[in-house]
Length: 231
Image (tube, rainbow, N blue to C red; front, side, top):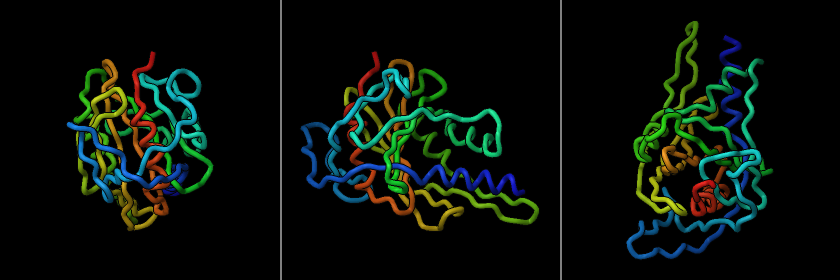
């Protein structure tokens, strides 16, 4: 019981780090592209941050795609120990809906959010079903152990749209997350999926209860707007 609760606490901690910056003017909408939607849930009025460095080609995160991140955000490879008190919980946290993450992009301001890059395990999966599986897998019903109710995670209000992301046609999703381990208050998530050759790649935003859209969306918008095939 103590081991299970500790593992859940570790997973909650994973959701509460990162950084980005905010901008205000809405981007122009080109003819034939998805219309700009200001305010919730997409917040298209928040512009991409200025580019600082490129992620994806070698270094800490070797990916099927490359993209830009702000100067204040750094990419790092997610290292999971083979053994240890939280090893099983951490191994579970890097897999979701048939995709695995090995790359995290965050900053120095704790609690303001970060984003992760996921690669779908099976080749040839289209962007929309890959993204739907990813969103649905965020719903984790609570369990009961020895008569004690353990917390769960609820996903609701999922919305999807087709967008252009750098060099790719893409599908983007937004939804609300309620994690009863932390609080009953809902927070919002965003993710985007593209096909890069025979692999599908997802970028997801991770937020905490204190994260504002302007904290994390500028970095995410910069990354998704500069996506290109690696190599």
